[in-house]
Amino acid sequence: MDHNLAFSCIGYGSVRVLRERKFSTAPFAVPANWILEKSDPVQFCIDALKVEHPDWVEKIDDDTRRVIHLRLKKEARRAALHS
Image (cartoon, rainbow, N blue to C red; front, side, top):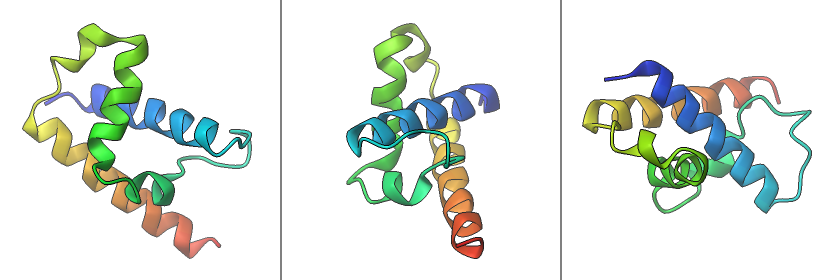
């Protein structure tokens, strides 16, 4: 399990969802709520990472997938507290 890979994946997913919604990345740390609305939020992040780093994707195991999903949920809860 690679925590750095999990955070990188979330970062690429964040940029991807912001581009889809045509938002600047400036006001958001992690747009987790929008990513969690996707049918498979973890795969959404992985697909975003794959565009720039296809060789990294093969290193994403089940534990890393779980960490990605848990972190997205944690970020969504944190964002809800501050809005």
